[in-house]
Length: 347
Image 1 (spheres, one colour):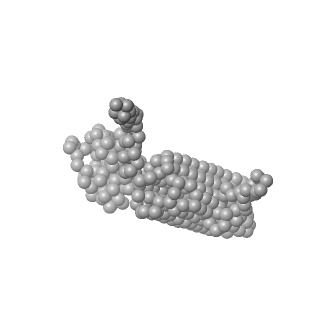
Image 2: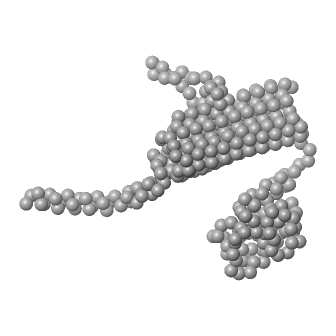
Image 3: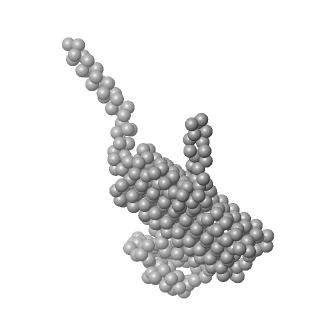
């Protein structure tokens, strides 16, 4: 990757201060920037590095004020964090360009599968009968694609992923290494003799457009119907999504979260790490769930923040924590009051 500051500024639709002809070759952290690097400043905690960085170009927010001279050429944008995301994406595309895509040796691609144009299929990948793979999709080695799986255009599937029968994957999806889509949901019917009868899981998993799923995440197929991840959702590594769950548009879920069966999570929600959500409840649009919370009942109001286990509204939880920390002191006061009351009663 090589751009002049002017080319980069035009790409980001920003305004430029400094040398428009200075060239950048790669992105870097502001505290480690050297000549030829492009860095960004979005968090005020890092402003001291703006005065010392050796980077050639620095991307900042429009209203950023500097109290000392900055040596780097500055590009001012509406959102520095979003802009560096665009730069990193472009850098990755250009750095990973490998020319014409092919089907590598040692693959097992069914003659009944439909493969689009400019598709890459890595070595030791299996593509089963009646599977469909859209144009410009890149499948890394050691991927398993089951019967009748449909994969859209421009999707990337990393090594070791497993897409079991009847999964439907949209366009521009990223599926991380070791992720399993379409494994059986955890369904067992208790029997009179104390044993459990397995309930057949006959549904599938549907992943809509522009979804990203991290490594080693599991999404179970539905008992009937579909487990659905709506468009734009972003799932971290090590997440468990149970059967018949639905995740709304543009919802973000952090690592080690588990969502039990048939729960519906709304759109634009933010779920922190290690959150547990019980089954058969509804989470309203815009809900924010703090890390390590346990959600045991439906959240009905939109744009509410909750925390704790069991989770309840954030502000109430913070007030409760203040009281909880004072419990030893309050117990001492209560004991003293009881002693006074007993003394008065004895008189």
